[in-house]
Image 1 (spheres, rainbow, N blue to C red):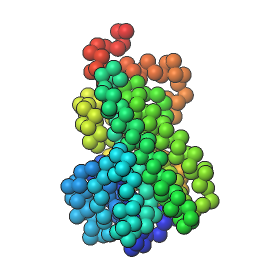
Image 2 (cartoon, rainbow, N blue to C red):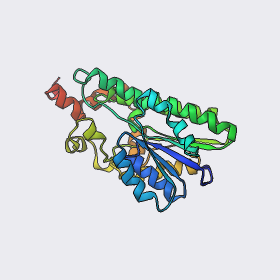
Image 3 (cartoon, rainbow, N blue to C red):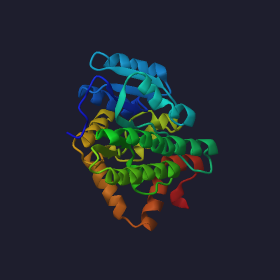
Image 4 (tube, rainbow, N blue to C red):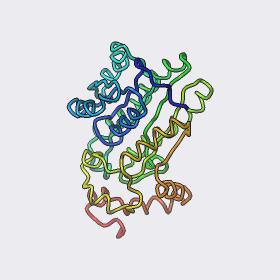
Length: 278
């Protein structure tokens, strides 16, 4: 098994664990006997999840904004102060802008880079430097199918997830044979709080993409943990998402990008016109 064996003093640090995929990954790990350290900005939500899981495993709650370098820098030290060893790291925390870059605040564009890219590099580097000398550990980075091609309407978000994909694949090759497992989870559309946080009407967004692509958060989480446990390296949950992602990679960019731009509801909202008429 590629996941480390659960132990009382070992923990799985899960960022973005207050809702959605992160919360469900924590549930999946707890179901398999792993203690979890829940990390997010909203401590009240973390405590609700901790109450749910506490009868099964040891659960720790650490309120931390991983987009804040100072707060993030003390995260592993706090885990250590609680007498725990980070055996599993799940970089799930993610935010994103939706719509035209002509409308989105600069601070929001930069914030998604800090959370989706900078925090992944920071926490992964810290984890690797602890895990490799021990000869065991597992890291799961949560990307997106949007990271497989440019995505007009979410250009910054897709670029950050393209980084996560490339970074994770390279890291996996680099750490081969060290005892540290690395995997990439790339979901398609999932009904979480992501769209609401990005200011997008979920119904309009859902109508723009085939219903077959949407997956429940718990199934996505299970696919990610299974990828670690089976040392699969990379997984796109759901056959429709896998097929559509591979197909879109084959379409020449000069045809693909106008098609994606034309259908994205965020661009229709921000540009205030039907792009197909342009």
